[in-house]
Length: 634
Image (tube, rainbow, N blue to C red):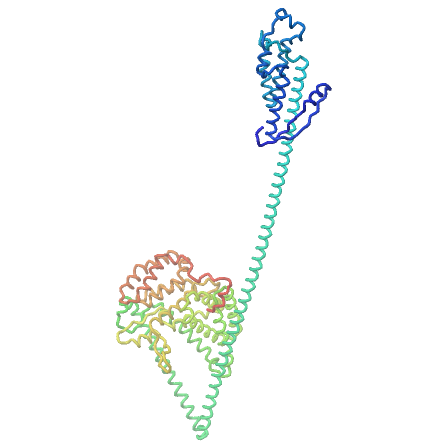
């Protein structure tokens, strides 16, 4: 055993040993002792065994006793007469047993293994023949005593074996206790782990519930904010409508007051004259005015016919001469001029059809209601499919509910409002052309005759929309601006005279109108009388009839940016041929023009074709169903 472990040692006393040997029973007392006590007991047992083994009157050690006992005994004849009456010496076998027990007793304090080894050595030495004990005639222990010693030694060995078994049992019990402790510790660890997992699951569920509550709160707040914005916008539009109504009523009151004043003055003047003379003079004046208007109308018709004929003859030659041609004739293809004349005639016919409704003073309220309804619906168009569908349906139902004469008037007012939105809103944000164009296409699908009114109103804004170009002559800037239909703008300062708009302002207004027109042409609304075919006609007339300059290039770029995607899907190879013509002819001619402002539009056209931008949807083409941006009015 090592010094760190406890052992169970059997320590029988001498008296117990003797009594047990005589009575045939053995009793053992067990005690847990330390290695130091074991060493002390071992030394005590060894000294006790030596004293018991040593013969009387002898002081030899166990080794000398072994040598004496192992000597060859003398024969009986050789023994001296003086020893004849003494105790006879033990036989060799008895001597060997006695020596073996004595040696085992001596070595018993060193443990069971050392005693067994010593016994084996004694037996080997005692078995040698011819050796007898010659310790000077001293007698060894008798055979019965040796047997008792050997028996006690065996008993001690058995007790030590029992102690080892008891120690093994104690160790097994200790190991079982440690195993139980380990199992308990593992069970506690598993329980703690389960508690931690349950706590984590609980915390995770709580976090999910908090997140759900937060999302619901945010959603509720967003819906509340949306409702608040919608309410504010509705209130704002209602306030604007009321303000506009108040202005209209005030203007009508002023007009009525002026009319009353004029009537009063006329009544005063007419009272001073004779009734018959006044009636005759009025009749003559009316007849003269009618004849004059008839003459002016005939002269204008003749002049327009001659101008159209001259324009058709000079179209191709003017295309080659470009901007350097010193003539005041319009430059356009015959098809473009014919189409312009047709749509303008439709507009004139519409004006004549509504003349009675417009000139009737008793129908001012009806006209005011139509103007207000048209204006409000156009202002409420936004960039979502939901709002576009709603406004288109409202306008269709409203126009369908009017009498024919008032319906024509409402459609003319609607085209005016569309052009106004193009000049103001679409020119600033080109993406708004798509929702505005979708509403217009839906209205035209329900009223196809209004398509000519839309194009005619667009032509009145700029001849480039025909497309038609007015040749520019040196020294006639004002005349050229009038022919190109430059508008007048308010000048800076109070009381300042109006000024003609700049080239940039004119270009922005033109781009807004063309973006809206291209959005209407590319719309896929069922029943739309305008479509990709009209878009193809516009591009072919522009490229075949107009010279390359800043205005025509900007018109071409705007039209391709909006309708290029639709034209590519519809015509494919034919559209690629058209782009090839632009790249090989139009852009080189544009680069030759001496104008520093041409470079940006030239770069945009080149990038549009080189990056194949026409293969992707234009910005703003795909309208969302509904979101908060629907409150940004078009």
